[in-house]
Length: 488
Ligand code: UD1
Ligand code: CA
Image 1 (cartoon, helix red, strand yellow):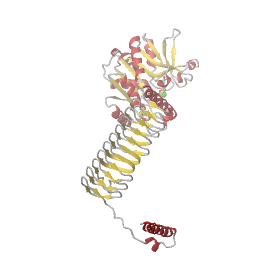
Image 2 (spheres, rainbow, N blue to C red):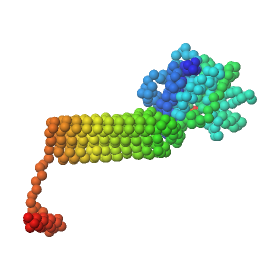
Image 3 (cartoon, rainbow, N blue to C red):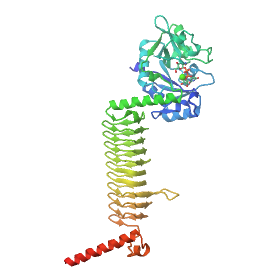
Image 4 (cartoon, rainbow, N blue to C red):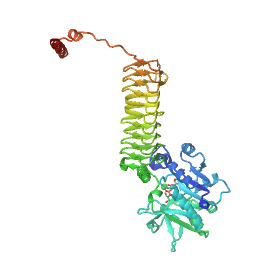
C-alpha cells in the first residue's frame, strides 16, 4: 500500500497549554518515558511520510531543542503572530517543499495515545475513497468544547462548527472533530488561502477547510474511531495522569500477549521504549524506564526500578534501583542494591544486599555479596569481595581505580584505598586497609597484629560482671585441666 504513504505529516504544537500551569511547554510533559510530542512524532513516523513537520511558537527554543534530540530529520515550522490551527497548517506548508503533492496528514502534539496504525489506516482510507479531506471523528457522550461534525441529510460531511460558534441545535451533535485529518495538499493549500478569522475566537480555523472543499464540489469524508483514548488530548495534569495510566495499561497488555508474565499490572510501570523477553516475570512494584531491555526468562522485582538498564537472559533482580547499568545473563542482584551508571555485572555474577556500585566492571561469576561500596573498579572473573568492603575511590580531589584480579579474594571489612591493584589469584586479609599492590599468589594483611594482654580485665575492670565472668572462666579452665591430669 505504498500509494497511501503520505507526503507529509504536520504536527501542530504551537499552542501554550495554559491549563497545565507549568513552566514547561505542554508538549514536553512526559508519559510512558516520552514527551507528548515524542509520542506524536513516533506515530507520525510509523505512517512513513516523506516529511514530518512540527509547528512551533510557544517556548520555541525549548521545543526545537527537544525535537533536535528525538528526531533531527523533522522540519521545524515557525508560526507567526496570526492565530489558529489553520494558520499553523499554513505555516507548515510554507516550511515544506513547494512542490509537495498527494496526501498530507495533520495531527496534534498533545494527543499521545494516537497509534501510528490509525494514521496509516486514515491515509489508506483517504487514498482509496478519493475524498479531498478525511477527518477522524468520534462520538462522545459529552462533546462540549469540541468542534461538531455537521452532516447533510444524506449523511455526507458538510463541515465542522467550533463549539463557540455552534447554534443551540448544533450543540446537540455528539460527533466531534478529533483534530486529526488527511488532506489532498492542493485542496488544503488553496482553501487555507481563503480561510478568514471571522469567528467567535478571531482565529484562522483549519476546520473551515472542510466546508470550503465541500463548497468547491469536493468530497469530505469522516473516519469514525471507537477507541476514544486515541483522540483524547492532554489539557491539564489530571488528563496527563489519566492518559499515562491508560498508556501503561496498553503497553503491559502488549508485553503479556507477547509472553511476559506481569503479576500485578496495577503496580507495574513500563515505558514505551522498553523491551522484555519471553517468559520473563515482572513482580509487583516494578518500574522499567527509559531504554531498559530485559532478556528472556528473567525475574524482575518486586519493588525494583531499572532505568536505561540492560538485563540478560535468566537474571534475577530483586528490590533494586539501577541506572545505566548492564546485568549479565544468569546474574543475581539484590535485595536492596543500588547500581549506578557504568556498572557492568558479568554473566552469573552477583551483587547482593546493601551494595552500591558505580563505574564497576565485575567479571563473569564474580561476587560482591554484602554491604559494599564498589566504585571505579575492575573485578576479574570469579573474584569474591568480602562483606563490608569499601572501594575508597575518591581522595577528595580525584577519583582513582581499583583492580582486583581473577579468582582473587578480598577479606571482609577491608578498605581499598585507590589506586589499588590486586593481581590474579591473590588474597587480601580481612580488615585490611590496603594502599598498594598485591602480587599473584600473595596474601596482603594490612592491619595491626592481634595482641593479647593477660589479666587486663582483673586490673582495669575489677568488680564488674565482666571481671566476675573472667574469674569464673579461669576457674573452670583450671578445674578441667586438673581433671585431665587426674585421669592421666
Ligand atoms: C481544535 C479544533 C476542534 C477540535 C479540537 C480537538 C480548530 C479550529 N478546532 O480545537 O474542532 O474538536 O481541536 O481537540 O482547529 N495550535 C497551533 N497553533 C495555533 C493554535 C493551535 O499550533 O495557533 C495547536 C495546539 O498546540 C494544539 C492544536 O493545535 O496542539 C489544537 O489547538 P487548540 O487550541 O487546543 O484547538 P481546540 O480549540 O481544542
Ligand atoms: Ca484542544
